[in-house]
Image (tube, rainbow, N blue to C red; front, side, top):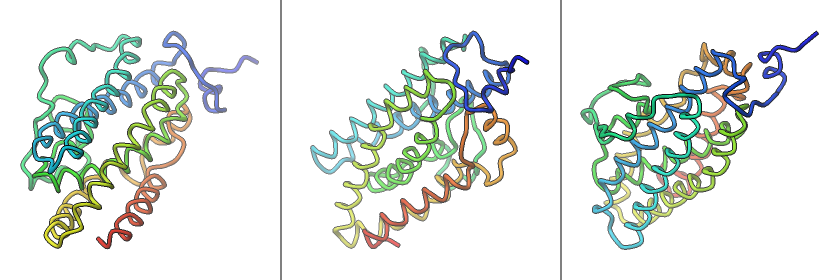
Length: 249
């Protein structure tokens, strides 16, 4: 008996070209890629505004590096989206990637506006300390999520995610270095605590509901391997240790 593509994927099979993917698989893969691309572009655009808030040359270089590399990561995944026939023209025009909601907005994990960015990228940054705290929390989330994406069943995309993962990990490390510098003063520590209270629930929302109705489908396709709750637990453990070491808990 011939094995269906769905059965092949469910048993850990890999796909290497757009020509042999099932329609539902294609839809879920494009959704995943669009979320990544739009989040990287929105994150890059938002962080660009903080470069001039950086307190020194090293901090400016770190911020500029993050802005550049996130845009580059988006471009790499966008090339794969184009191979699936996705309309990528809108990425060549002017899109309001810097658009943000009011600081006190509360949208949970819901999408807003005309793109697929994670909800956390709809909230505005307020100064350098706030940007560093957000970068630390979301950077840790990105590292954990990229470990998951690196095992994705569409091989060309998995290779891109494996290539960008070390750079995203470095963005997180740069944030940690910046936060350690900030908490050397009492004023910096208090500002950091206020930003942690603000950003923590908003970053957590990006992991999705603990029991996702789509996880079983994504798992059968090899597009997900570990549930949202497990990824969130990893994030809480990682950030909890960091904040404890910095006496911010």
